[in-house]
Image 1 (tube, rainbow over the protein chains, first blue to last red):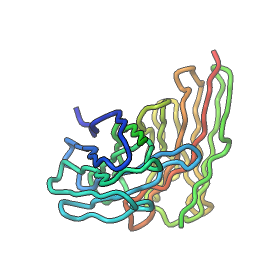
Image 2 (cartoon, rainbow over the protein chains, first blue to last red; image 1 turned 30 degrees about the vertical axis):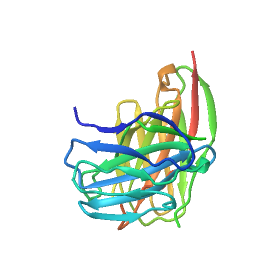
Image 3 (cartoon, each protein chain N blue to C red; image 1 turned 120 degrees about the vertical axis):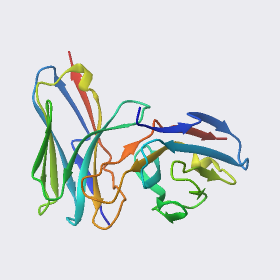
Length: 114
Length: 112
């Protein structure tokens, strides 16, 4: 089944403890990105990647890192999580740049930082 | 910077009614626009994608229209059902960009 998967789905952690949220897609998509969703603010893009080894900042990149070493994987790294990073995180992917290509979203990772 | 507004923020209708959800955006230079549905605590399901060169797109009981020059899109849901209850999000993709800009959504409740 074609899909975007994220792990873990739920995570509770403490301030300052490094964590990684994984994202993987099995559709051979070029483009991948991360969004966070917060009440009253909607979805905002954190980082995106147009291909392997090519990443760039979105609207809210502070406090996050990403890497794209393989086409299928795009992990989100929080080196020193803080309570303001408590949020619902989504990974998305798209086959290409053309106007016909829709973006597919993963099931989300609910992160709580205490 | 693109800004997306969805009106109304919430809508409650009896089962069987036809309804329209509205989306407006400030920058008409877009590649396409996607409509998503999101169930509580869940991920986003893509419903329809309209390319910038298209006026409308249909899938089952759903019909989305796009007026790029005026910065508007509508999602029409025919013969609504309780299973349609969810939050609906519109997201234009900027020209020359992969980024989607999301509205805050319309929360739809269909009452049996």
